[in-house]
Length: 201
Image 1 (cartoon, rainbow, N blue to C red):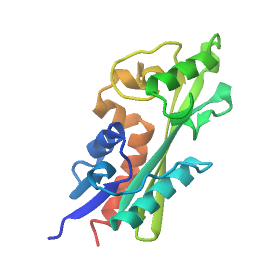
Image 2 (cartoon, helix red, strand yellow; image 1 turned 30 degrees about the vertical axis):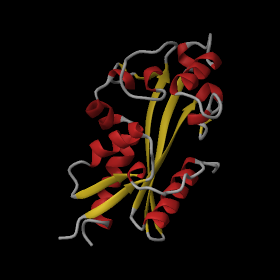
Image 3 (cartoon, helix red, strand yellow; image 1 turned 90 degrees about the horizontal axis):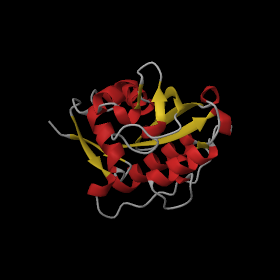
């Protein structure tokens, strides 16, 4: 039986790790963009998470000849009118670190009381098979702490607190985070799509 390959349209190894974990028991060989030489860098220049996810999946599916899965994630903070949103990875500027972005977020929320620090993470995952595109969405609600907690995760995880769990994402195990996180919720929906679109052909 021919092995089904799925390209993850990202070179972010933190994302690859989370995606592999959710999809690990599917009969699919998962390949990240960094494992294939010559794939183009896709500029995330769309105005929405959906637009960026679809663009990345479509471009890399065409370039590789493989089904491609891409996601784009935004942290949407109520006090900041939904910012940083689609610019979450570039909130503090271009070519910045995770810490730079967290520092910028905490600076903008300095002296803002806890009840006004509500936020949500939103992920859109796009699957491109030839010219066909499917998308799913996942949302996780929480609040932004005034200081970092936990050593795990990446990005804004140390300051994104989930009240129902009583932890930040950075304090959770990968399995615990994947059960409730925006990316975990979206990927669970995408699992069902992959089973229909790829595994039942």
